[in-house]
Amino acid sequence: MNELEHPTGDPYGAKDGKDLVSGITVFPMEAHVPRKADIDPKAARRAERQVAAMFTTSSLMIILFIVAFVAIPNTTIITVPVIGTVNANHLATGFAFGMAILLIGIGAIHWAKKLMPDVEVIQERHSLTSRDEERQAVAASFARGKAESGFGDRKIIRRSLLGALALFPVPLIVLLRDLGPLPGTRLRETIWDKGIHLVTDATYRKIKASDVPLGGLINAVPENLLEIEHEEGTLNQRGKASIIVIRMDPAEIISQQGEAWDYQGILAFSKICTHLGCPTSLYQQRTHHLLCPCHQSTFDLSDSGNVVFGPSARRMPQLAITVDSEGYLIAQSGFDQPVGPSFWERG
Amino acid sequence: MALNKRHPAALFAVLAVALGTTGVAYAAVSNQTAPKATVQSQTQVEQGKQLFLEGCSSCHGLAAQGGSDGPSLIGVGAAAVDFQVGTGRMPLAAPGVQAMPSMPSYNEEETAALAAFIATLGVGPAIPTQEMLDTSDAELALGGELFRTNCAQCHGAAGTGGALSQGRIAPNLMDSNAKYLYEAMVSGPQSMPLFSDQTLTEQDKKDIIAYVEELQKNVSPGGATLGRLGPVTEGLFLFIAGLGVLIVAAVWIGAKSK
Image (cartoon, rainbow over all chains, first blue to last red; front, side, top):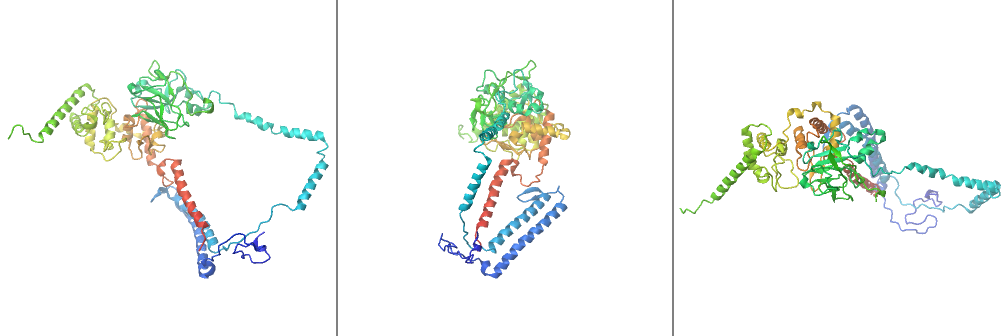
């Protein structure tokens, strides 16, 4: 029900915050102040012209959009102060289309604020409950349905129906099986193993120990990564097995995670941050610090890859390396601990 | 005039002569043990040695052996000198965690002389030749892959640089050129690790340089790049500017008209 239907006929009579029916003051209300456009016809006409101008400009913007889209080649790059270099076609069409819809919106709001009625009114509300006779009719209808269906008397139907309904959700629970299988040892193991060659990432060349310079960094992967078919998860394996190979003066190595896990100052560490698994190869050769770009965990690679800064809780896993008979770097064994971020069952 | 009354500058003169002689002698001795990297014109090496003693030896030591203020330059090669001096990083304007590029203090001839002198101290990477920098046969796609594997973690996927720890930075590559890119890779300036020609071959480096040059040519069709840092800066900009505009609009819509 709205105020226009009220029999007293004065829809705007609620200035004092009185209920339109009872006449009781329900809440205090400030006195209504008429706007300029309400009392001055000139101001009203001016506001009218302003709104019309905005809608008209919006139309012109649509025309500008079409002209710009057709006329400006979409390869033209121009330089605009503040914005910098920008594609002229995109700038003009985007500006025109954006302004077109913006002007419609601003015009509508201006119209509502300046010219549409802005008096304060009270809207009555009634109880949401149905009337008593309607409620009784529904209850009677339900009782009649129950009696006529025989749900209370025919026990065998009732029981078999309840049984069927009880079993109905079971398939949904059985479907949960497809959430598995459980990861098993996949989170704990990488494809690194004893004797696997270290190869450069992207170019897959074996790395000769004598070719690794002091202060050098090589992003490397295991050679057997190439044997894995894409369907079997090359990226998953790469995500776990990526390492960095660095070389420092053996005298600078403070500690390692295992006895003689380096080869003449060449060290290999997992590239996967132990915090949240970002690839971490921001190696600073002077300080031997390895920085993770995501949350600034910093590992000291000259000191067992220990965490020196940041949120990471565990040190960077080290891969024990040595050389084969030809001097190429190989792994002494796989990682002795899971690489990458912690997981629930890791303990 | 009394015999014991010396000129005030005499002490300094004696000191200067003594220091200079020691330095030259030490450098000469150390020269004999170091293998000659490349045959350089002797006058150029001499000029480089003089410039080194005047401008660099206070930090790097009279025989370039290094000290508490600067690392040893024996075996760093001509490439390192050309990079550090040619980009104005050295001589260091002030001690700090990072040498920043600035106007070079030495002209091309002097830089070449310094590089020639340092190259005589030990075997190190040489200044790349024009042929090594010719990227006409480079493979751009492989260069991109190598860049993302080896460079992007510090210099950013768009090569615009990034922050490291404790005030260090990986510089923006957009104003660099092929020669300095190559020299930085082989010499590993400051925090940067070395990428030797054995593990990252000359051809690999060419591919990377070609890719960086391609990035440098990239215009920005979308307007302001906001540092090309990706979703963080773009999100922050939208969060502040976009929400700001929305708040202003909401206040305007809600305000009563007069």
